[in-house]
Length: 114
Image (cartoon, rainbow, N blue to C red; front, side, top):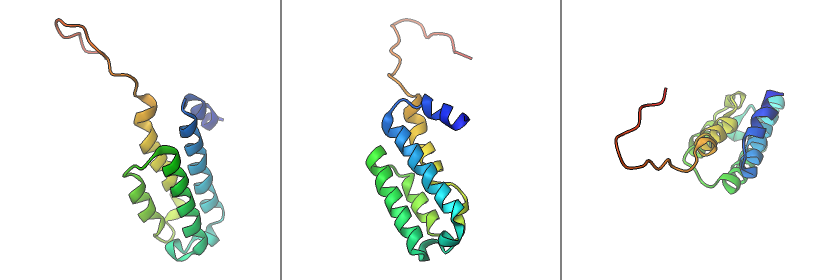
């Protein structure tokens, strides 16, 4: 239930869809481990990773965090770690919380916030 609460906090529909795609791909790779255990030698693993990568780049744009994810997905057995979800977290974390830059009025610097 907390996952859905988190997805509700993500405002951009592209980010929500990217989260759902990454979580689904990682769940498939973990749930059907015998099909994906061979890493880059498994055609199913390669096809799923290429599809996931293309969808995520389409939704979020290119980000360098996708490169280590693609490399990690080629390692046999590394699919037990949710690499796509971690990459989407890294890509969207700054975009979700950042807003317009704060424009300060001229004068002395304001006191630091805790």
